[in-house]
Image 1 (cartoon, one colour):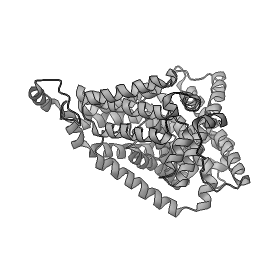
Image 2 (image 1 turned 120 degrees about the vertical axis):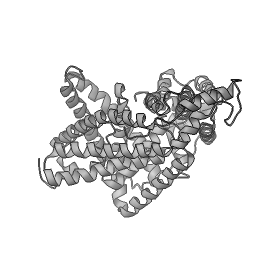
Image 3 (image 1 turned 45 degrees about the horizontal axis):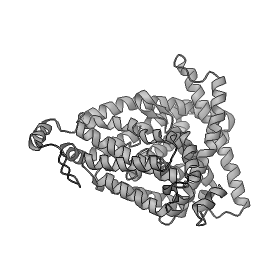
Length: 243
Length: 217
């Protein structure tokens, strides 16, 4: 749910350009902090987890327009630096399949990586405190998704004045002029009354649908981690402790 | 997501004028479509752009099975229309922008083998990123095969039934878990082969004609 499913041209240019700059800066910092050998050794794993995330995004739960992200499980398996690169790659590939705009790749990377990095950190923290695998994964996933959805809402609300402009804009004021209606002024006055941005409604719908999604993804991620723990506990690096 | 294999097949096997067109030219064309999507605010202009893309889509002989892929992002665009209070102009604007973007990129990938797209991206992006992109794209097809096998196994274990939500959730999660583990096994083998071949995590692609590329694939 935290993925911005916006087409190109809806967010203001300054916002998506800032998203690209932010993503590049964070990427450079994380890559500088990691070991080079670690990157080349784990690149195939990164590719596989990114591919799993792309496939997860294709399993659509239609009534609530939700798909599993698998970002938290990928974050747990890859660690903070690699999950950032993985989300970048996932967003580029999803954008190439028309799933999310190309211009919002930077913003989507920042938001999805919040989910992956926070999920990883929360899981480590909760595991140390609870020593129970399923609750630690569930809570880490739930709160990571909640945080990334909030940041997505924050990003969307930054463009409010731009949406107002798009809503009020009638035909004939675009890059190319196509006048379809003679009573342009009447329509503009009419639309002026209705044409406001309903951000609250958007947030309420998103959070209520999101809640179902976070619970669902929390349960699915916990069950996936339980499955992995049963067959390949070494992948979770839990320090030899079992739940 | 199964359409992805058709997308790849179409890109490699297609012989239309758009398939033969240079990948660089197509990327520039996609850039222009993107510029149009960002800059255009008029419905007729966006509708015209969409019409052009549709004509190109069907004229280039891309399998019709791929077409639903271009409509998929509409599911999410519906969420965004709540922001406008159901203003028809805004809804149409969003839908047309979504359709232009998705049709443009799907058309690009359905007529251009992905290594060509990635090699051009490699001229501007760090090699680490392009290698990761290549690994991911390759892994998608490996996982798609695993997914197909897993679907059969899932069917024997009761599949997904709305009457048994918990069992269905366990089945879905086990399927994803299996997918991830198989993927990790494949990635370990891939790394071993990379080391054996003395890989330096660089992405090098020879410039070839489209016809030669098809034979190699």
